[in-house]
Image (cartoon, rainbow, N blue to C red):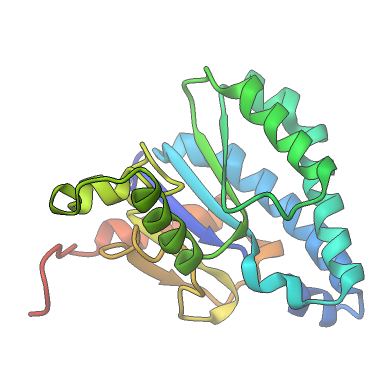
Length: 230
């Protein structure tokens, strides 16, 4: 069964708290979070999800301890190297959102390689947000419009959307926030204007295909409204 949500966005939150409750380091929590991502990517297509966007590293995450930041970067490289064969075999197309010039060279290299290798795939689009912030994305879009000297009178919502990192992708239907928090945390701010938001107390490392199905079932039960208030 499918549930009408073509694009699902997930704020992968709760890794640190999951680890702390087990007396483990935050890095252990992040590694468990990678396993959760594997499970969700495998489950998503059978549930009718065509686009899956995940928040991996925000522009604010640079404020974390240097050793944690380094571990997160290493995990990204490790994930791409270990999963690329299966992702490619399953027809997954990888995209990366965010501003990437500040990332370590190894990350940029693996991201470019994964994007190129899967560019022609026709299955699930997996968009990984790395060094991403919604406000930063909007500012970069404005700069692009200015740099291209576009006619201000011709800049409408459609034109602006083409300048975002998610160009060519539909807006999210559903934003999932594990760990009990109920905010977007600067993730896909423009794109999520009419998205349904689903919050669950489950920490991200405990997320799996069944949890995704539960979120989609809740989405399916809701009556979506695309206008203003009322």
